[in-house]
Length: 389
Image (cartoon, rainbow, N blue to C red; front, side):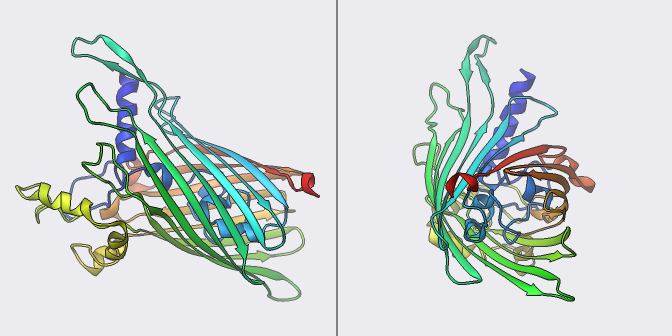
């Protein structure tokens, strides 16, 4: 029974914009559904503070910025990643992620990925404590992308995504139904090699990804239509070749949800008689309207708008193109979730195989805020270019 309670809380996290934080007057996180889409699913980017929009291209670029595939050296690749969720409490909640790409020619590329979030088994009981059956709540998303090298330094990509969310809270008299939605991403990437000094070179990179722009999703047959976590992320990166064996790089991302700021509570932060009406108006906005409003609708003005921007950054050191050490930091403002955590990770590449691991540990008073605290991610990549010569 205790494990069931933990799993229910995990599902509740997926339905909210952030995990539990202290109640306060100015605390106003942005709600959105299918939070699985916001979880970084692979080890390299998460080891660098969840920054990956403008890092060097790799097989898992589909999640961060599919336009990066246009600058891959290998003809094809695939990867498999696993993220245990609440591993210290339960053993059967996991996020699985698979990604792959294929370079059609020097300019055209296709890629795809699938993520599957499993909440294990939930056992339902009636009021007498008799078991009523077992349910397996889950969410998954499948996407495919096309990327094009626009010039020597620029590339662009478009991704299409199908989302299915079945959280399994239905009872006999409930109107619950699994949610389905469709979304698209639009991404761009810039990469240029420059001479630094004494023949040494560096890669300068920048990127932008506008993701999860699509339909709303409903779990109650259309009574309430919730927003997907539409998202704007921009980043910059710099990778420097110290010598023929040693390389070091850094990347920084800024992230903003393109979802309206909640305005359905009164000035004291509590519900009042008109809260339900305001809540319905909040969810009744069109997707296009809500995206544009998200840049200027915070109740506390410009200060709160700035608080809706997350900052992520990381560094990576690589020796002989084989061994990598990574670290990073993720900052989310206190009034918007208070998720602050540091990350570390390692990577080993040998012939066609690439293994990476990352570890998250929370910082300061945010220790109870991240469901991924003290979690290890593992990613295994395969360079398949040798099969397509």
